[in-house]
Image 1 (cartoon, rainbow, N blue to C red):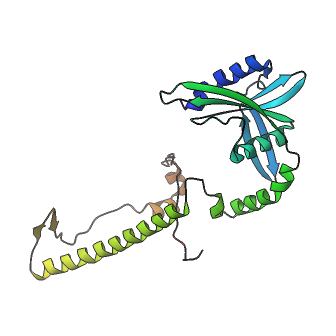
Image 2: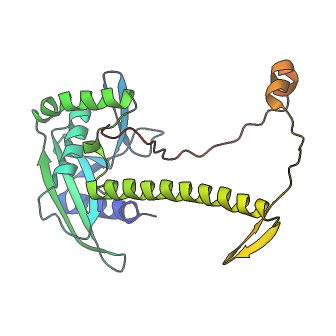
Image 3: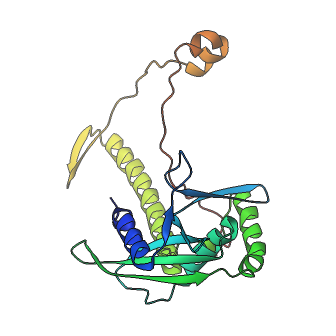
Length: 244
């Protein structure tokens, strides 16, 4: 289990005990409090770490962990997250709880502090969010939205490696064609070249089943033998024209 999830309950409950607030349980059937937001028909479902209540006022609870304590200052990227949550959950403030991750995998120093809702924050970011949603609908994400670990230098290195790979593929194809041609010219069927063996095979015929034609001519029968298999999703990188 990831460190933050493993110790989340301990950190939040410790803070609740010390600060004297009560944790509001999630609705029936939910493990966490959900926030459902919708902008321009684009729906986002988020899960809050908790909701607390003290002196009759509810507030958001967000737990964070890391090797370096916050010391009462929330990084901008986390502030965007909690401001988004507070806006859609209509909560006036957020209690940040933090647990320090020690080298041995245990919790070190713990701290808690408050973040107030910035009512003007959403109005400032809304135009940018709408542009982002429009790009998502087109299947495009601008480079500035790439995850933080993807630096420009890494993208440049990747493109350079792709170019080298394509050149290597081209060389291998030419090498194979030239080697086959020379072996045929000299009547060589098999030879050893360094760390690999090259051998020529004769032309041959093979029988295959024309499934496309079968499905077209016998759709009902073909449907009885269809098998649905799960296919794992992944990342697809498509080479584009230079400058795009």
